[in-house]
Amino acid sequence: MARGATTTTSWTTVQPLLLVLALVWLTAVPAVQCLHFYMDGNSPRCFYEELPKNTHVVGQYKGEEHNTNSQKYETHDGLNLFISVDEVFNNNHRVVSQRGSAQGRFMFTAVEAGEHKICFTPSTTSAAGWLSGGAGTAGVKLTLDLAIGDTSAIESTDKGKIQDIASKVRDLNERLQSIRREQVFQREREAEFRDQSESTNARVVRWTLVQLAVLGVTCAWQLSHLRAFFIKQKLT
Image (tube, rainbow, N blue to C red; front, side, top):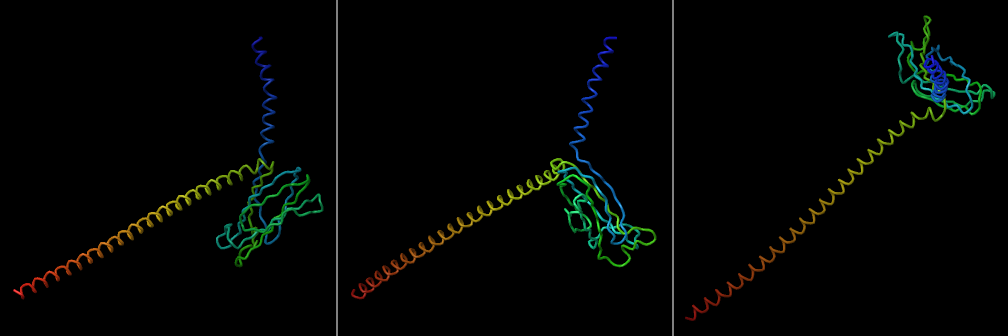
């Protein structure tokens, strides 16, 4: 009986600790909402979010326009989206006004606690037949991933990506430095080879001149000797 009482007491002690850990984990991890909705023509689509003060919001969106020929929703370069975020509690003060392509991201920080209105307005430059909205079919399908939470918790992923990019940039810089060192080494070897070639050519020229001088002296001596020999023979 004493052992059973000890086990019950230990479990009763552990339960609050598990509850606290779960609450801490839920508080640390930002809330992520994934949703999609449809928009007719160029009509805006808005929804409201109640945000605490100093809450960072990052949204990833992807717009797909309905193609009446293929009867599918497709992404193309002619589809643009205008994103706006207004502070409803502050006379609809606009904190985000962004026009982007069919796929991208937006972010903002709630300076004050209150209700925020997030709107998406599509526009297209595609040919007729798109954005028809006919036969009960919506023109644009928008997929939205909305991360709401603490700034540091959300930006950790971005920092990781930035660190990866910085690492790649460092690797590229190291490769460039290695290529530059190799180029300098090659230039030095080329200069050394050029100097050796010029020195060799200079020595060859000097040796040729010396040979010509020796040959000239030898010819002069032989001519003098032959002249003396013929004079001697003539006198005899």
